[in-house]
Image (cartoon, rainbow, N blue to C red; front, side, top):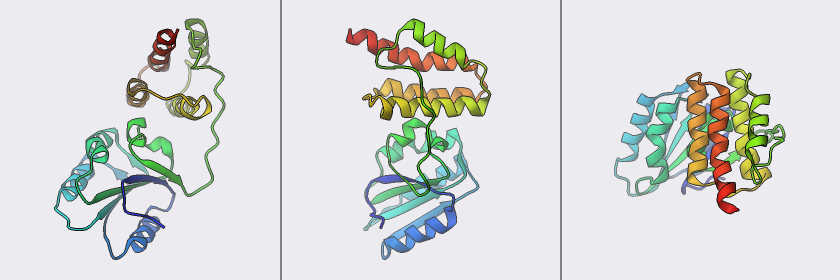
Length: 207
C-alpha cells in the first residue's frame, strides 16, 4: 500500500500497470501520471508546472520511463528535495542506475523485482591510499561506457552499503558527476580517479 508522503523510487518493468496500481491505491487522493518512453527536459518542465498548481489535498505525481535524461533529472532535483505543499513524487524505472546518485539520495527506494546483485569491489575506501587507488584504476581503465557506468554503480553501492560509509555531499556529487562524464565519453581512468580522490581526502583528514 502506498502512502502519499515524501517521495520514492520504485524499480519496476511495468510502468503503465504500476502507475495505475498506485493511482488506485491512493484513491480518493488525486494522482497525475507522466509515463514516457524516455523522460526528457520538456517532461520535467511539465511535471514542475503541475507540481506548483495549488492543491488543498495531497496530490501525487507519478513519473515513469525506461530512461531519464541527465538534464531532466537536474531540472527535477530542487523540487524533489523541497516539494511544494501537498505534493508527493513517485518515480518508476527499470533499475536504480537509471537515476543520478543525487536523485536517489533524495528519495526512498523500493524494488519490485529481485534485488540486484552487485559485483564485489576489491578496494577499501575506508583505508584508501594512492598506491591502491592507482592500481585499481589501472585494472579498469579500458572499460566500455556501459561497463564503466556499471562499475560506478557498484562502487557507489560498495561505499554506502558494503563499507557503510557516511557519504559526504562532495562524495555523492562526485558519483553524480562521474555518470555525466561517462555519458559524455570522458576517459574512464580520469573519471575513476576523480571519484576516488574525494575518498582519499577524507582518509587523510581522519588521520
